[in-house]
Image (cartoon, rainbow, N blue to C red; front, side, top):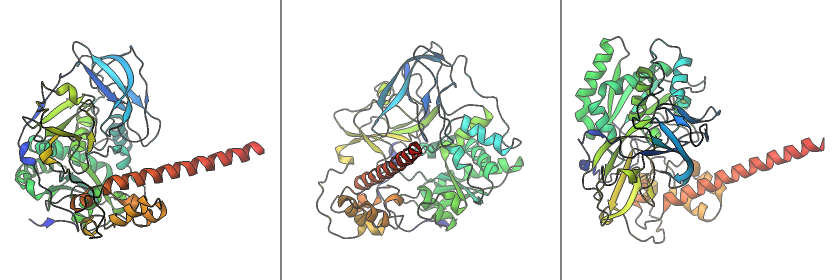
Length: 460
């Protein structure tokens, strides 16, 4: 079978053997309450429940009128105890609804009625995806109904299932495909029905052992009258699972700077996302639970867990996750390349939480930063063909216009540049800072323009 790839990238140690092959096990009830962020992708939501309210499992507790938003549902039946700020997986404080579980947290659930995805209209299908609160579950958490409703001038020719899972340590997507191949194929075909195009499952070569199981599920779907699903293998390389890189590898197309995959005729979805889509139609179930990997040498038994969204990681310790506190040097939300270093484990599992890592000192880079030696290794490995060193120099010089010329806003923050930097320059952190400064500048300019327009209106 032909193997596809892209230019650039790196080969960090995979370290997937720690949790590989570990069945996904349910860890509920691990606590008597959940701490649920009211926004998990898209525009900010507003809580629509108050302290003291009784809520049912599957009930909407936060939403927004913005199109680029996704509602949030309660994963349990219980009582709203408080609405407070809490640490989130982005290592920032965010508003959360805290719900105490009823004696039977599953009683009186309010799921939607099942909906046949292959006979309903496109409008009905998109409404179901939005009403279910589905977001990208690979980390970005972009509202899925927006992704499945591209501009009319963008003809979708490829629907790619991003099954690369290129981040070291993480194995939850691989295990999901192993245990639920039929659901994965069903969700992919539902997406294909909504947007059109060719449906492809894109696997990294280190997961080739899943091909027979996925081919069997695809054949079963085809025998029942569904569209054909193809399996394409990509080289095991980081960041092979980045949306733009997987498109380039499989289709040979490039997403232009500032563009979206739809502009290249592609829609890319994560494994967890298509499973959630299948559940939304077949069961009427909103996105209220998810699977994720717990790994790292600071954990006595790495595993793949399935928990309600809003479960505090700290509540899983030590009953579900046994941590060697004497060894843990860093806690990460996500993978080691693009995840966030957390100040504690008191943060909730969110829709985009693909993993939680407890790393020892031997697993992290503790080298001190030294001056850049202009070796250009960061340029060689950058999958976006940018010049990270020049972006960082421009940001440090407070010249954002120059940084943008070098591709500041096109960086996908994969960390490949920082990984190969012999001087251990904090490239990604500086680029993130530059992006935040640029966004702040844009917001200030818009506010100033709005204020000026209001002043003119008042003068009239």
